[in-house]
Length: 472
View 1 (cartoon, one colour):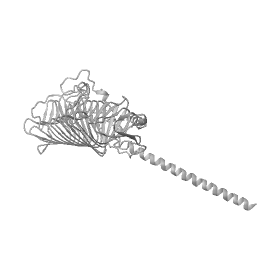
View 2 (cartoon, helix red, strand yellow):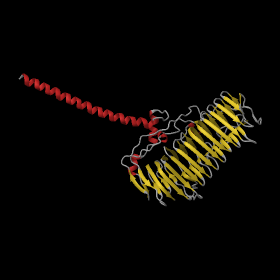
View 3 (cartoon, one colour):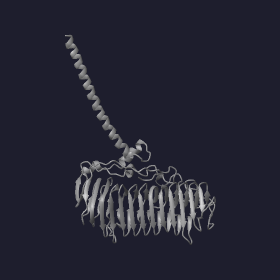
View 4 (spheres, helix red, strand yellow):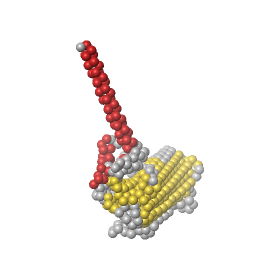
């Protein structure tokens, strides 16, 4: 009896031990799976701008990748189309460093999906281009395009709320008279590069009804260019055009254009990327013919090499530079109403004006403001100005190095409050006025001083356009 009890006890202990080991092993696998999933999630949001939880939820909802809807997407076209079972890649994100005290509110100027350089292709549809066969995308989702062909247009004509991501994965398209990518309608389109890609339009563009489709990538709605690959654009007119907001957050982009290289109505925003431009007209141009309170250019990173026959960077309202390395060779290198440089390296080689603040918008006083960074301006001979403001010049920090017969020309007030000024190789603490056109006043918009000029009707310095909030 004693032996039976002992055996029973030992058996019970063994069973309990085995059960405990099984539970521990199972829990370990479960924790390992959670850890792996958590790591992926962290990498997908790593490096984005700081946001509250509610902001993140709103941003993710705004720019959800649409892959969950791809099973019901209507992506029709003559190219081959397949749906991948699982082709997910590790997310690569761009880190942005924005100024919290600049003229523009940059808190939500880029969304998390803008900054993610890799597409979630787990439910993507795949197409191979074929000569003369257009590809039509009619619903939200991710679409991977590859192959070489001529006379092909990838057209997006989706619903107003649809977000479409086009992944160029080794694409070469050559057209004579129509865009290679044409966004007719969508909420937002992402063009993401992987590998080496080229898009060319060689002849005169043909209009689409009342729409003058005059760019190799032509979008009526918001468009973001990102990715880890290379995109080369050669255009007989404009390179990339958006009738709303245009963002570039990654990839290598090379553009040769007979007119403007990159243009948008409401804004051009650049967070990263290697961008090389050779344009007969402007390299970057933001202007809305119907509303002079928009049309700004924001740069906080990337490497830009801009060569232009007219303006290197042209914004109607604000041109704000918070970072990046920017080399510009042009007639006028930076032109806008309010030009603010907070950080970065800017090298200017101009034949007319280096940096020109003129009254293109009724919302801002023409102003050039340098708070940081290193700005080098080399001017050509003749009637040229390094810094030319039809209003005010403020140098508060950073380094300004000007080589010119006329380093500064301003009609309002010039203030030197900090930083380093070098003129023709000599350090100075003065902002001389070449034409002595200065007058009393000055001051930044929003500080209640318009340099003796007239405030625009209904102007509220505490209520800038869109409440100071930049659209996403």
